[in-house]
Length: 271
Length: 299
Image (cartoon, rainbow over all chains, first blue to last red; front, side, top):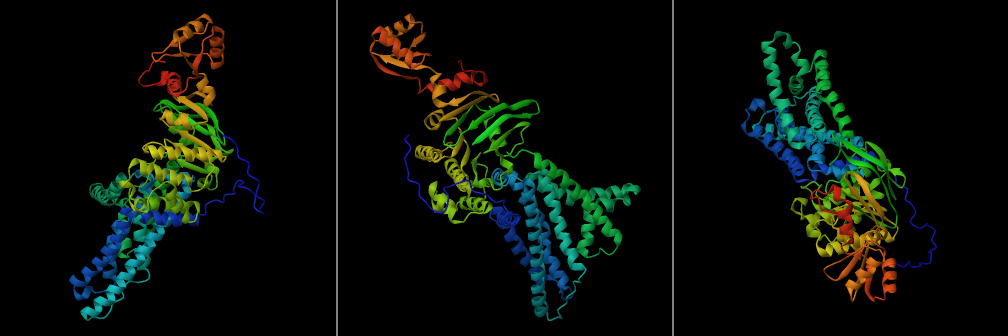
């Protein structure tokens, strides 16, 4: 092929020299990950189902609950219930879809630092968790106002300032468990099954074990994360010991597996 | 420029890539060939940081891929067109990639147009895409950041004839503007038409590399004459072993100049004299990788 001689165009700007690419800022990664969470069909419907089920749950309290239960607490609890199931799923899929759907091939080529990608996913998960819980409180408040007006009773605002953060923490821990399972297993089906095992099957086994083996009885609440979850949900975290139990279960079920999972994830092959 | 130096990747029990070194130069299309499981894809995955090498290195313009600040703007990568979230639309996949690189959204439409995906197709979910459409989407993702280096694994796979020609023009155009293209393919004809340099890998080892002309010249000469028997005889007299093919052509391992000289001395008029291309690349490929072929093709 002959080379064509193009007279050099004299402009102030140099010819296409090597561009000085700037590193991708973390804020951008978070925005992109947030977008990725909801632009898949499954992600979209999970978000929609949170919205829809929250309203249905609050609505059913409005219709079926006796007047004495027309309180802010029961509405918020009801509207928050679907979330406690769906939010961990969102957290799981945020991580595992990169492997199960193999989109990680593109993601980790565009951003080779896998730790940063997972970090951005963690921030996104946290934001979605906080956002969803805020929605639960808001729907609960609206339903409470509407419900008390319909029932003709006084509006009862019975969620104390100490209870609200516990409800928030309850949902965030559920998401963190899901996220951890996602990082460790890196497979959507396995992580979802794993979540139901550790949240539904495992507590039963631990309780049973505590019943037949007396020495295990004192140990059980330090190992079983569901025990502290229940306390958080009830807003009953009133002693230092309970918070210490929460720290212990968080260490066992979230911190340690997450660190191990991250170390292996950074070295593993993306196929 | 892509530089691969003494790259080795071992798995428990076997070595997928064994001390591989080669360079892909700017302004040239480098074809990366090898039988199934020879280590092409593993080598390419190591290049882009998806697989960690056991030893050795792969660099892009002297920098490790993982150390590039915004790799999408420098290297366009297509390793597997099917590796996309099936529940996303084509447009969404491009939007996400373009957002990650920090490009304006207009770039998405430009790319969709470039790879001839219509707006309606771009709105469909990738689940419903044909392989060819996924391939086009993958090429669009690779070109999005206007990179200077392209690493493409089997990009012509699943493309229709018009798509293959389009791709060929695109890659030669890219290289003629000074870009570096590394492309693997099983479609030997494609590689033969498009590649300037070749790297052949078998069982994880480089079995041949060099310019296409060099490698194909090594594959010998094809000559035709009105009396092929006389030509074959003359070559034999001159000590050049040759074979007389059924179609009346004479093939030999000697270079064309030698064959021409022999014919001249013998007073035989040649009607055709050239490097044995055409089937050349296929023959070369099969003979070079004979030991590593599953089917045990005779060299």
